[in-house]
Image (tube, rainbow, N blue to C red; front, side, top):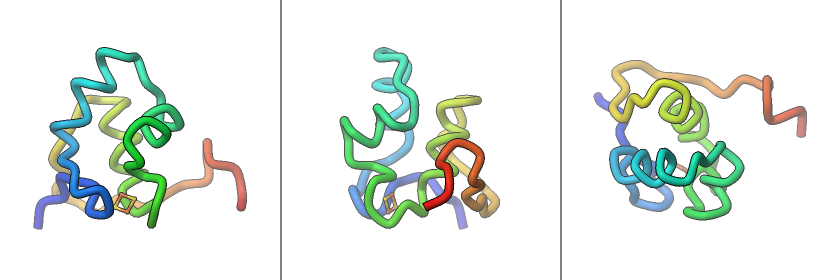
Length: 72
Ligand code: FES
């Protein structure tokens, strides 16, 4: 199964990437502007990779790391 969207916001990563690129958004800004990643958070590692390398469709499960989120 491909992973290509924030389910909570019903938004494809492919719709987000141009906005990320145009605004040079980081993950925090993306979450503030769109709400994506700010609800259940399951899409956050994918959003992070999308921002980093521009991928909008993922074929493997990514899990959140605590590298930039800190510990809750
Ligand atoms: S899937 Fe993106 S916040 Fe839940």
